[in-house]
Length: 198
Image 1 (cartoon, rainbow, N blue to C red):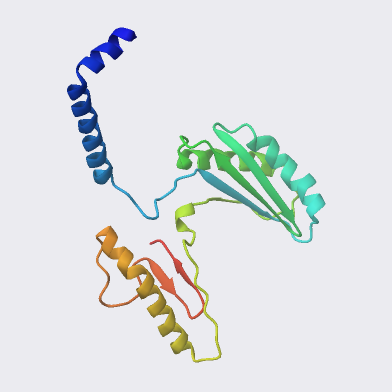
Image 2 (image 1 turned 60 degrees about the vertical axis):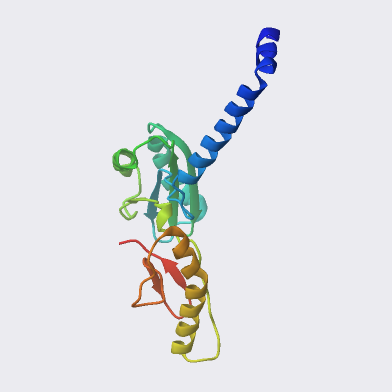
């Protein structure tokens, strides 16, 4: 160890040159790395919705959730199960490990739900299985209200979005649409603004 330190001290100019070179390479790499202001976060999530008219939350947990949990708990790559029971409805959210293919996981979830359906009451509606895609959730919701005409509110909403988003579009290199002051992949109403996916 002492020999390495002595060699470095005896060649101090070479060490400083290598250190400066490492900093330059690091800074150039940092500037060339692609960056997104709102990156697409991919978390494998599935959602099971079960409706049963008139069932209480306690009965939904006992009669609907328990048979489902028995089948769902053994799914490959399952990280967490969260259920919410309410009047006439049970929802189950399944979170999988990040390396799991969500399409394959959905197939497994549907098979498990089909296996558990035989234990559900006859009056229970057909369970629905869906993917939860976080990229479809609103990044920002703007609510406007006032005792004015809807066209005025819509115009104000347009101006707010234009003032906020146009400079950020320039930073990303995207072109602002000339036909509208609302960014692409946005929908607007007189009260809320939220992104959507095609």
